[in-house]
Length: 246
Ligand SMILES: Nc1ncnc2c1ncn2[C@@H]1O[C@H](COP(=O)(O)OP(=O)(O)O)[C@@H](O)[C@H]1O
Ligand SMILES: [Mg+2]
Figure (spheres, rainbow, N blue to C red):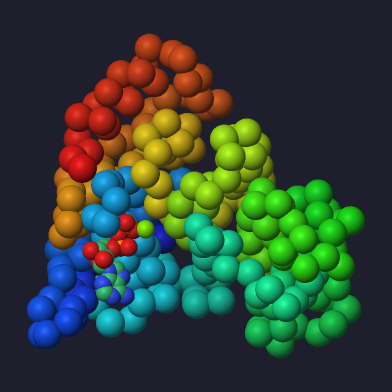
């Protein structure tokens, strides 16, 4: 395996009012392997979202360096947001089609790809609906479909299931794992939910409270599919609760 992403000495400060500054991330260096499911956890406000935005290219103003493996370009990355971030005036079809329009893909190819992705997420019947007509779970399915329609090599997700009820979140985690297994992409996700991180990940980076520094990388060797009630699961869960400082 080769690293898909290499972070070297990533730091980020935000300028506050009256010339003050808030350091969000401090000196984070690590590598994410191609094809792995990598999760960042840490307390609220520790800099997880900031770090993910830097890694994905959404945030361009930072110290340090982000390197991608050869052959991974900007268009090969997709992002799924906690608040879905759908365009309210576009239909489900229009939202999922958007990144293909942005890439200049022709109409026929777009229709084909969008239809397949909507089908994948059980959204065919809602193609003509607008986001406010959908439940939260359906909206995040649209968010996932929009991210995946371009067939990304790297998928970034920022607490994608936090706004959903636990049944919907459980179903979407299962979908995500299946898609990851099918498409063999690299997944980088932020979570503040310890069992979620353990259920999904190959490795977990625990960040310290702000400014976010790398506390520890946990290698998650639990056999898949993860059994949430197994002694090994509980043991890792305890270890993580001990590491995450609020
Ligand atoms: N655009 C911004 N401007 C100013 N401060 C910000 C901005 N984004 C994040 N911060 C601050 O940086 C810190 C880390 O934020 P964030 O990365 O969102 O944390 P997390 O995702 O772990 O909850 C917080 O103190 C937050 O208030
Ligand atoms: Mg966040």
